[in-house]
Image (cartoon, rainbow, N blue to C red; front, side, top):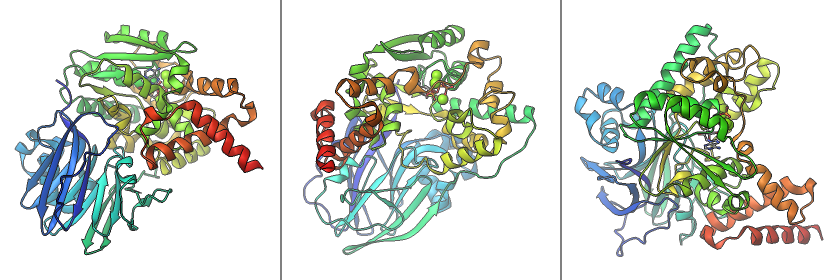
Length: 511
Ligand code: ATP
Ligand code: MG
Ligand code: MG
Ligand code: MG
């Protein structure tokens, strides 16, 4: 059994019924596509859902229609608050619709999940919402005929018609008129003949800037309990979840809790001929008894998948692409078939794992606050990263409740006794081998040799060492322009051609 959910959607809401059926947009997410349509209060919704075995892609009740990509993790809590125990047994979309009926827009302040939602309310208004972290990116574009909403920007970028500005959403540069719905927001849009108005924008989550100075024992206990819950709710009774495992503390912690709640856990580690973390991952897999495998990818093959990383993440930031590339390459090489993947991604942001040498504590805390204030739009947690391989992935450390807890801990609990991520390591004591608990952080791009592979290829092609970073940034921007804004398929984009064009553009610019 694999995950049963809608992984992405595209839909157009307009006031005139479309004569022809909508063309199937080219999603990067690979799944079963099905057409959806609905109408209420003179508005027509037509679109396509891409799903991993979901039986109901669009749910309707009382003239209200909902498309939900992703899943909800506080189902029991929500059902209880609704006073409707049976709501916990239906689909997540049904639960969200029931929550909407009960709370209205406030529902999106109550749901803890990994989702993007599009709702056509009974009054002909369009509601779009992201989860607290915007972990399922959501995009929209408006013109004189209606509003297009999609979980993939590329499906909106090439649409005909003059785009309109949408207040309250972030306009993507490049002139396509595509806007990004920000993390932790719900927008209510009204469409009237030839016009789109933002009737309301509600913030549904914001990273806490206050800190709790609690004792060691309380902090450790809280992190342990919330991580257990975040992993357990993400397993969704899947009998065979997969953990992408580096042997670092973050993914090892996820694997440990997954094993505690699941009969059979697969784990997989990737490396290149230049670098890997196979040894440390194997220690964890052996200790936990996971069904473990290793995958070696040649670093030149890895770098040549950059267009796929851009296609999936829809970003132009080369440093983030370096983090995502090894995972995308790994997902694309897993045996095909439905699969639920849990990762240790994102733990370092609230815990300051990348800033382990930052002194003193108030500076560490400032850096954490800054990182938490600037994550939105990086798309690191996008499900399309694994969706390109038909896989559903989810990230327990960015569970809303766990994330709230981690961010707001006194920084002295994050770095303590000379150890980075101290509170997490303590929370996992007794669940993992001592060498794993004390293993220093190693970034995914370092452990897999991704950064050095891209650098090496550029040096080999004659890019001077002092210009490597600049060249990577320019290549990433060019790929984003071609693949997302101009909707080219990643297989049509070659690394060497992008490099040559980037270098040529630079020379021309210099003249
Ligand atoms: P640490 O941050 O302490 O090194 P970690 O390795 O688990 O712990 P990251 O390095 O931040 O975390 O990597 C993010 C996530 O990406 C990991 O938690 C893991 O799920 C996945 N990952 C990283 N490297 C690999 C790898 N070589 N093979 C498989 N998955 C990996
Ligand atoms: Mg690691
Ligand atoms: Mg980490
Ligand atoms: Mg690591």
